[in-house]
Image (cartoon, rainbow, N blue to C red; front, side, top):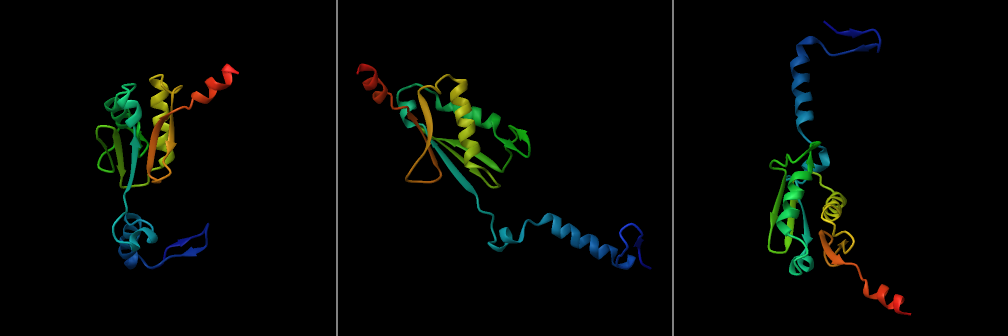
Length: 153
């Protein structure tokens, strides 16, 4: 017995194969893309925010930045629901964000800038990608020494 759809003019497989088709669809939907499964294990992404200069000068508290990131990072469209896919750890001057799934470095920069603006230190600090390592952001002071030299002239 065949199933016929008059709108699409398609003839599908017999009903006896319906279970096999359903199982194949489940396998395809559970698995990710072929390129990701070829490597075997999913590759995690690790980003570091280096806050050593402002923390040493006691301008900001690193624990509050960690708390801010935990509350604001969205996973699956929900903020604060990190689960097992995203972990945030803190050292004395560095925050490490490790993600198992897709996670944008640009999104981390956006959230860090938002934190700086919220705490009114965005006028003095900026978020810069480190030249040495691609997965590291640094919080640095704006170079205001040049601006002062221009004002004196």
